[in-house]
Length: 357
Image 1: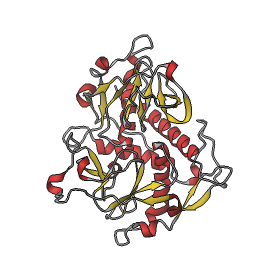
Image 2 (image 1 turned 180 degrees about the vertical axis):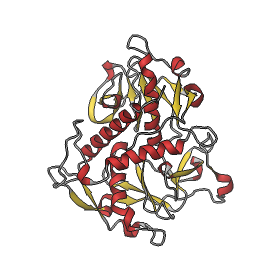
Image 3 (image 1 turned 90 degrees about the vertical axis):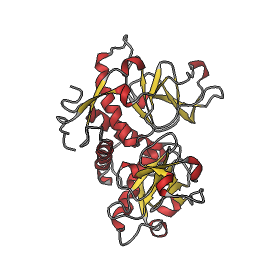
């Protein structure tokens, strides 16, 4: 991807953009019980998205929410957390839940530009971070251009997986990977469509949704939206049936038909799109991102505004996926690969010339 021209970007005070910064409950080392089936345990490390291991939940320690950006006060590495997590001491998070996963990854890279001011023995605590400034792209009104951030990181993801032949191993060394052992699966064998309805009997779009996420309208709604992770409106949670850890497929729209987006957070359906859920138990938002990427490659060119991407047609198509030795989809590989892609994209963004200067 071409280097971004940041000359038109403007500085913003972090605390004015994100007033909510939280110190979550601490899961102490003596309470940690590692398990592959657990939830992420975020600690003060610059590696592996800040995650030391997966742990058993503890009844008296409430997990922090998915969709936030964490950092450790004594190493100041910023990471987007796509899943609920537990954390060790001196971990904080910026509440970025109103924004898409890709926008948050962009923001994490921009926040990373301030860390050179804070060596290990001089911690970056919330009161200090709130006073810092970061440079962001702006729209015509001079406000942060959230749509651009989303589109940039989405493009990075798209380029990273532009073809199966270009996929790379997840060991961080970026060796070319042969996909000759990957297998085709019928989409309908792996996913089921969810039937999610509007619960409010007198629902009126004029009064019952908002283009901005607010305390009242806090539920993301999928519809015929191209970009912004498929979200154009927000609704009241009480008005919609919802699901989480799903994938959004846009079935209608002049441009958006066949767009596919991972929706790890709780989401409702407005119209002209639908949510599908893996039949296998998937707990990783990164696995969802991988699946959304390969699903879009499998279906996007097969449909158009005049030939809607309805599930009865899409489910009959095939998708090519990495497999385990017993020829089942390799969910762990998908998770690891997308984590590597996101880390690489964030590193590239942080290294852009003039950002933060």
